[in-house]
Image 1 (cartoon, rainbow, N blue to C red):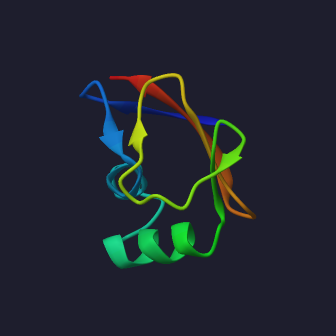
Image 2 (spheres, rainbow, N blue to C red):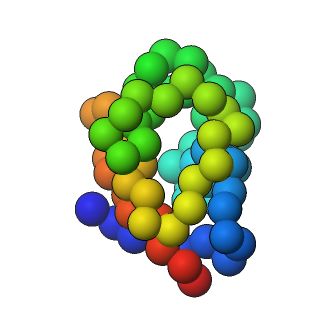
Image 3 (tube, helix red, strand yellow):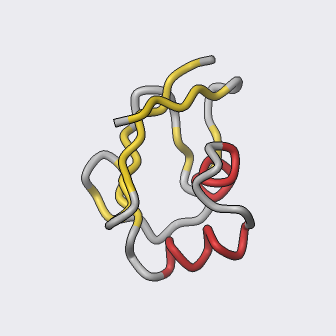
Length: 71
């Protein structure tokens, strides 16, 4: 599991996916989330604007798993 640092207290899920370089665009993030491929702390998430904070674990089916940390 890789660690990705953020510079704020929280970040929206779709912005985190772009910040981490997991997707190249907001459109790609939207598709992953709408297709039910994104899990936050083990729970499936369909919310693009879900707030992510340090300590959260983001997992994308067949792609990878990341822990959010502070930068």
